[in-house]
Length: 259
Image 1: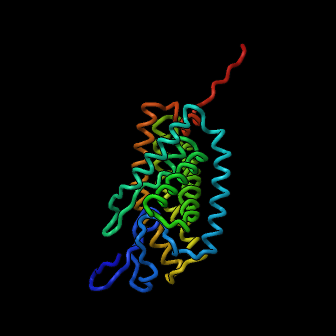
Image 2: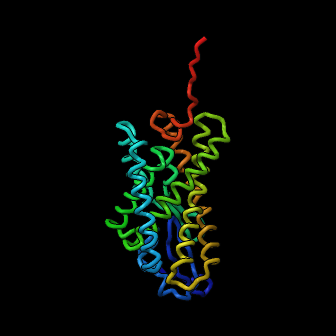
């Protein structure tokens, strides 16, 4: 969509969880009707194919890994988590003037049901959004799954593990670590997009310009991500802590010794 500010036309293109305003140069190449995720044609076919392969490999590994994380209790929670993320991603919150963002949900899912299952949940969400709502291009599906389902999930979960290790072993620490992981997962996914842009962009803006705009905007979006992630994990911990993957793996094991 094109808008005017101070007499100058700008083009707004949405990626990942936010909206970035770019100068009118190449506006015909940057204006797409698909909101929130990478649209068709923004990254060249060769680069899209490479990342589709990487995403497929990651999803295949997640299918295998999720078997060890899910049981008859947690499998329904994984489905509910995917539904929750799908619904909440439809709701945007204002970040700055002319910019909005929405939950990515990678760390939230990873803390609740484990990172393998979280990758599967985000992949299902992105598939549904792409096919049912044209929310992200179908040829860019691999790009989006790689950024949000792999980089966002595993990068953010890695941050969660590091912060959790440094904090006391209690439920409040789990919520705080999840919030911090959620905060950083969003700019990490934005960096993933910037790498894809540098490798195969169809637009002519410099990579430095895109990196600055993407990371700056998505740090702000990450604050909303952190709040939603922390509050949601805290609520689930208060009601059914036995189902929270990030909490179960944090509990100290009792050691029985013979006198």
